[in-house]
Image (cartoon, rainbow, N blue to C red; front, side, top):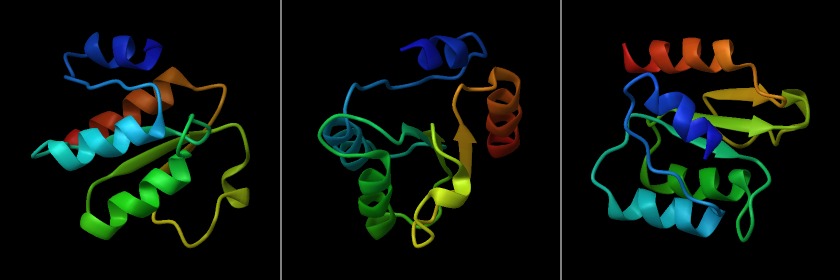
Length: 102
């Protein structure tokens, strides 16, 4: 929810959910997202699992994964646009979001 507030302060419309199953349902039920931001560790489905399922339907949508582990440890066979290590660098995230939306 904190991330949603940060993005809202930039006039970016967000949908925030509290687990991977809901994230996947939002993706499947909505027409268009400009980007998806997921935490690697979420209840029900991990960020990696959600990304793998999203990529079956959409190979082009930018996906940002927030993770407490180093990006080199993330599964190589998952198509992730950006991996941001936690604790989150707010300025780096804003820079990436602006790059994606431009």
